Image: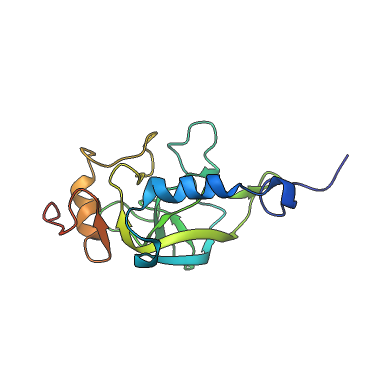
Length: 163
C-alpha cells in the first residue's frame, strides 16, 4: 500500500500536462493576444469548490468555470457563497484543476485565473451547466453585467448586451 497520491498535487515530470493541453485550455476560454489578458497565477482555489456540472467528477474544475471569492478570500465557483445575483464574478479558471487529494478537500495554489481580459462566450462555464457557453443561459444578463468592466466578450467587445 502506497501513501503517495499523484492526483495533481505533486506530479512527476512525465505526468505533467502537455503544452498542447495547456494551450487548448487557454484557447478554449480566451481570445486575442495573451499579453492583453490579466492572469493571476498561483491563485488560491478553495478545496471546497465544486463544478456541479462536471457530472461524476465534481471535484475537477473545468477551464472556463466562473469564480467568486468566499469569506476567506479563496476562489470558489460563482453562485455558491450566496446566490448568482449577490456573488460577484471575480475570475475565470484557465486550467483544469482537481481540488481534492486522497479523498479530502485540498486548497490549491496552482490555479491560473483570468482576472480580466477577453473571453469567449462559448468558452465560459456557469456552475451547474454541463456544457460551456452562456449564450441563451438563464443567467446570461447577470453574467454579462457583472463582467462588463473587466472582460470583453468575443461576440460583444463593447458590452452592448450587458444591462
